[in-house]
Length: 424
Image 1 (cartoon, helix red, strand yellow):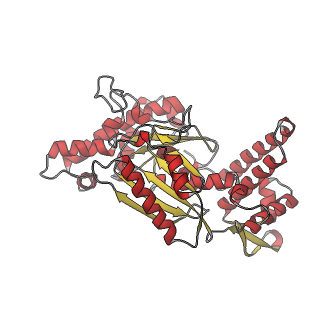
Image 2 (image 1 turned 90 degrees about the vertical axis):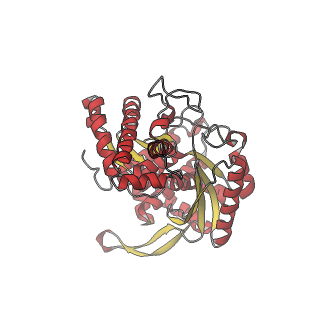
Image 3 (image 1 turned 45 degrees about the vertical axis):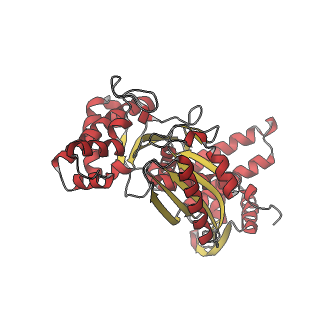
């Protein structure tokens, strides 16, 4: 598949944003007022600054399509709030020099939380989405949801206090699905009791007193791909498949998440791949995640070896990397099951790019991709296969905690005025 033209994704994003703005202006008389339009202009400029790093006002006007006077007015507000600052002189076309501006990466931050079945991560990020500090902690077996949340909030508070030079504007949390987007709570987390009884969004808001955004973990990872990977942020459909302690997916279409009715779209882990398979905690039978998640993989390795002390996922991963034949075979069978889910996803969602990430993808990425490609080519209609690129998530960076930060930053950019005093 051809690589996108460098910079084209940025131009396409700007084009999409401008088309939205044009449509808003068309319908101003139908209820959208000047404040709505001004807020959309602010969002547009903040996103351009994030993508460009630093930029002159005149360049922002050209790339956004806004009048230079409008750009100057908005940037002046941003500077009063301390949201942006001047970074120095830059040379433009024909040798003309102008003052560049950028987001303030030293004063403001967002908090990110990732909750999983066996561990959690917390972090602070600047407004460009770069990590200031990230910590991950494993959970004790049998720990209850209430205890987990109390520990997470305590540790997050300690981290914020230790970085007192930053003002935390918002908090994003990446959580396992299925969850209710409307009610702000996890509907089900296999292996951990009590999450469905906790109004998670409400409790986080009460503790940290900032806007809180909950996002299904695979959705968060998908948005992280869209934000951080220039090759992935064009106008087509991107699907992130998270193969970790559960299996889920996030779908981004032209920069917007596809959520479904209550926010649980993309739950491919509870897709039936064997109608006569074992009963899942969700109530279904033969669910995909019971065959290819990191928990399923570790369980099968333990069943094969029956060690004196139970193997952890890290132990099982090490066996594969050391080319242990039994462990490698189990890993390949997990890849085969995952391939079935990916084939179904291609047929249902017709994505242009599928990115595979999380724990299982970090065992032997090249081997996993080779196995999945072999299976998918045999099962997918050739014309669909020609227009679908499958790739592994690069590196072992936790896309979900970064995606939680992206969700928080997005909330700041969506309505920056709510975080600052207009008259300041």
